[in-house]
Each structure stands twice: as structure tokens, then as C-alpha cells.
Image (tube, one colour):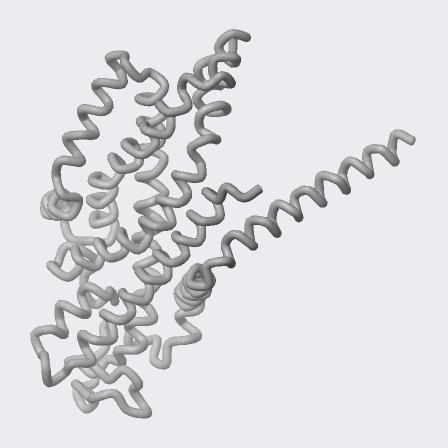
Length: 299
């Protein structure tokens, strides 16, 4: 009888999880553009993973020279044309997807936890000196445009992908701190928090187990929305020479090299720019769907 009850409870919990997943997918899929964004994100991730298989000329992603094929317009052999040293633009665009994802994921995975921790502390201790100090520091960072701050920090180090990620992270964590501060402060005086304090729960338990779960939907929504913005900012740093350096393929660097040859060699700029637009649009549409799914009032 005991085994039967445990089996029944397990099936019930499993069914409840499946029902929750189905409801979440229903809320997400109501917005058809969110589904398009999901497909776009999956496409970008698959291209980044299987770049060696998908690229027509993988060797063109590194130092390579073929002056006999330099500056060729799009054709059957080179669908996106070739650059000034005869490298296939399509292959280099494909190889740039991985760097773009590394940039976005790396910055978000570092900036978000830092900002969340400071935001939770400031929200829980609202009205006390620790909250005042944290939020004044956050205000200083937010008073400076993120791109300007990232450019300033990047200029202090040698131009590499890692240093550009570090520079953007330095300017990005404050947005999460401000966002989480508002969410944490709004639930700070709720009954379930007061009840946890009355029964003697530790502050760490209250912050991490009572307040943080009520901020997750806001945090996840911002993380997905920020992916496209961070990738765009990383491409901007590369465009001005502060990101990944040649011969490493990067969309921003490719645009910087190609715009000097406009309008004759238009493909050198247009196709990398379209790739950036695809990545940013896919993550933005996907983020809209995540927001609808997590913040829906429907049961």
C-alpha cells in the first residue's frame, strides 16, 4: 500500500509538471513572433555549434590569402562574395556566430549574478546605510551611457574578445541591480517575508528562498532581452577596433573593413550587418515570448 501511494504521488507530481509545461508553452506560443524568435535563436545556436560543418571554406576563417578570388561579388561558388584577401564572406559570417554567442552569454552570466546579489541586498535592507551605499554606486554607473563606459574600459586593455566582454560586464551589472532592487523592495514587507522573520529564519534564507524566487521572472526576461543588446554592443566595440582582432572573424570587424569599400563591394558590409540584425531580432522576439510566458496572469 505504501509503494502504491508513493507511485501515485510521483505520477501526480509528474502530471502536474507536464501540465505546467503545457500551460507555459501555450502562453509562449500565443505570440507567433515569439515562436519565430525561438526558431531564430535555435538557428543561431546550431550554426555556432556546427560552424565547421556548415562553412563552405572553414580555412577562410583564419589567416588565408587568395588574391585570384579577391573582392568577388556574390556568385554560385561564393554566395556572400569574397573580401579583400579572397576569403569567403559566408564562411567568416558563420564562424562569427560563435564569438557573438560567447560575448552575449559570457557578459550576461557574469553581470546578472553580480547585479542580482547587490539588488537583493539593497532591496532587503531598504532604508539602511548598506542599501543607500549600493544604490548610490548603481546610480553612478547608470548615469554613464553603457557604450561610453565600455569603450573607456576597453581602451585601457589590449583589444581582445575577453577584454571587450569584461568591459561590457563592468557597465552592465548595474542594470540588474536596479531592476532587482525594485522587485525585492516591493516584496520586502509582504506577509510571507514577515512570517519567515518571526519564526527565526536567517537573513540568507529570507533573501534567497523567500525574496529571490519572486524576482526570477523579471530577471530571466531581462537576460533574454539583453542578449541581443550585448551582442550588438560587442560588435560596436569590434567595429572601432576594441574587440576580437583579425584574422579571428567578427561581425563588427567585418563591417569596419567593408564599409571603406562601399558602394563597390557592398556585400562586405551588408551580409555581416544582416547577420547582426538576425541575431538581435531573434533574441528580442524570444525575450518577448519569455516575458509573456512568465508574467501572464492566466492560471
